Length: 353
Image 1 (spheres, rainbow, N blue to C red):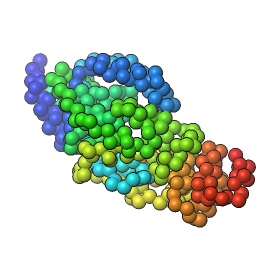
Image 2 (image 1 turned 120 degrees about the vertical axis):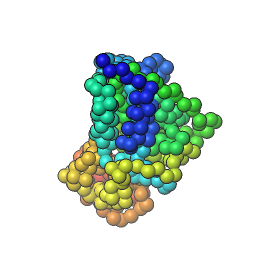
Image 3 (image 1 turned 120 degrees about the horizontal axis):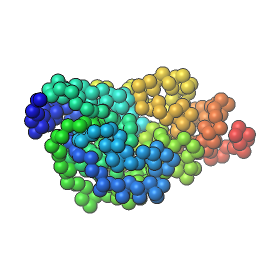
Image 4 (image 1 turned 45 degrees about the vertical axis):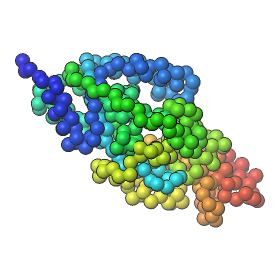
């Protein structure tokens, strides 16, 4: 039976991982007891909004061995996706401008597993990247990938928060890494720049006020009081991340994550004019597709309402009223009122609902 030098194997794994584009690699055990109370309190306070999936498989999240039998260690990796725009009110969050990271990172993790297999023979593993009830940030923090910032996202000193996470669950008894010291200090800048006040205190996020949640996860009517605060953002928000003192100025990323031209130079009126088949065609292989066409239109209607007054915008809003859904119409009516404080036929707009 082959004798494995696990200390040497860890060095090999980290070397192979970096050749595959993972700039940070760490290994952790399965003990998440330190995170259990905080997570349960967050759920109890209903800070997760309508993300019911957060309430499912809680035990599997907190006990990874229940998700994948025989798991002894978790190899955590980080892959950068670029830098944040220096401009405010950027319509689409940076992570969504390129290709869909889920399958891409899992494929790279499969390649890493294949390299390990070649070196030591068969072993048990399973790859994840935001694709199962995995407590990704907690595991990555334990593995020394980064520390949890006061905006609740993971921070690395050279990558900021501009990276994706992935995990390789394995039965190999690998030596583990240690967490790194948090380096936020007294800074609370991320809390102050949040457009909607979703960061209610350090390390406390109210998802129901978060623009990322409202424009991506939430499928209903966005509260009218929050619509002006969303600005021209139509998919996610990077404000707390880009204002962080650890936000990177230059980061090389895989070409797969380079911004697609159609989303890099956003023309809101052109996007609003898309039919559903156009939306599906342009979002193939993109995380943006998960928002769905109806909510995509809802989000753009709000963004148009928050745009400088323009007759072309008013015309586009009125035109869309004839063909869209009740959900989108409600937001279009608001946008028309924003675009024209004195809309002669404002009351008639309710006939569309």
